[in-house]
Image 1 (cartoon, rainbow, N blue to C red):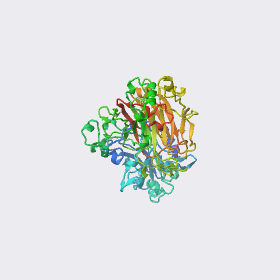
Image 2: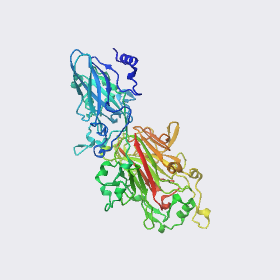
Image 3: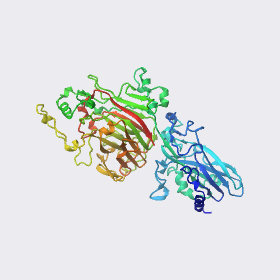
Image 4: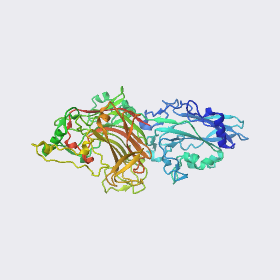
Length: 640
């Protein structure tokens, strides 16, 4: 009987095969010349439809394992199928299970030529048996008795599933360097004959997914669903209707780890009270590190010698203008932003409320400081929808005066080592260094990547004709207020109660995207326009800016910020609830190079040098030092 007629007949006669508790759980019956396969179930020992949350226990050293012994009795998924020998003699059949992350993948087929594999499909996260040298397993002898016989085996999803040497160090497979991805996983079963395996009718680099030829890796999903494997004689390919949804949810209450080299002096016990420290227990269990900013000496400021509680006072634009104009140069405080000399003093992990509190400490006369603070996740991932629920410090007071802080939620490369290089830039290459200048060399590969939310009081550059805005300077005449307390331009005052949500992708100026450009230009998504800006063709980042009300984002008890990082696009969203998010930024691979390496998430409150933000209405130098701590709270992070 024709295979497609068999499918149709089964659907008509047995509709229960398609719907079971709202979701099919077993595959349909499929026949070849020599055998029949049915009832493929990839996760017999797991309740269908429930998401699986990544187990962080010991993941810092061995990477994520799906499932662990805490999620399945023996730490494996058990799968099974039934096979019927329709030949005339007993036979031994061969089978192999494959899995692939379907949420964050390139299509298996090249859209320009669907008979060929997509040039980036080998990047997809797919695997099979943990030991790649194990190719097809044997069913054992199946008698020709016209009955179905059950076959069972087990597998699990692990990092570096192709066993690539790129992720090895000192002869050790560092699976954490290519962790499993979050999202939905599909499962594919291939059953075939001994001849197809032993005589390599199924190619060696399909049987062993770790074998790479000059053309790269072969994605088994392409080979068996669309390529030569689709028409192999006596080979049955079954895709399970069952999907496995994987979610990461690092616990802010599980502690904050600090590298012992960062700890100064003796531990006075305060770190234990804060759920923060360098002890071995936290090394294994903590899912966040305290983040220490790199302080660039070039960010030095000449700050006014003023300490003020901006957020809770009547500090106004008139105060700002006076302080800006009438302190002598020798009175200014020459400093750079700082980081804490005593880790754990400014970060607290609360195991009861499962939150992290971060604190920019106040300043004192003679102990001038604008101290950055933040935390960073410890387990790298590639792609995902990162959603943060937090209550970060407000940035404006009731007079719409800025307190000098930038609230940032950002992804950054886990490592710039070769194992974490981005895919090659085939047109001119990347700028080699993050801090390199215009004359920096261009290279084929880099490890640096960064995707940012940076939220502060600055101006959108686009689509204005003038970059940056023109301000009225006035004159230093203390006796006539109108001469020194000059108003801002109308376009600045129009957004007086708003802060700017800056959405940036650091593409390292790879010119490969078809619509790569500099200056201001529109990017369209879902019938809306987002204006993108790049200073010049060697500038390493593309930014979009959206004005938002400070009272809404940071005056509420909490707010949500989301970075959806896909293989071909990045979407930035904000909103009052997780199901009420709105897009504030969008970039795709037509305009920018999307990173594909492993990254970590950082949440910070920091004092940016406003020289980075040309055209800002307020200067960091002329913003007072904080009289009170600036406190932020991080309640939840999900990556799905």
